[in-house]
Length: 127
Image 1 (cartoon, one colour):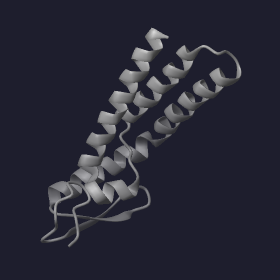
Image 2: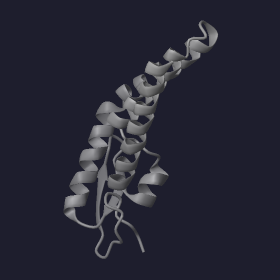
Image 3: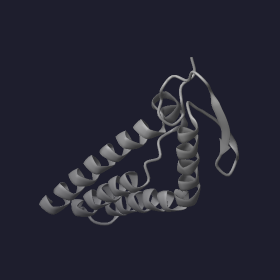
């Protein structure tokens, strides 16, 4: 049985639509989930460059520290930035979205992002 892309519930009566810049086909359990999934796809399309900017900046901060100064404060700062990026932009893999649903995958991604951000901040100020 097929699962709803947004909430992850089993679908009795499929509601299909397209979403995103590529007009990808999506199947949800109801019209409400279709609208929420389309809204999430629009959010991804709009904020994806900012997501990549956060990921690249955090990696650059960590790599820069490895080659220049042995100060771990910048490594933990990069880790905090990576957690903040995951918190603001909860983008999981398409496989995770199809397995759990967009709603649950985004919640889990935000929780992990917050945990990484907090751990990085604690380590940064204790370094």
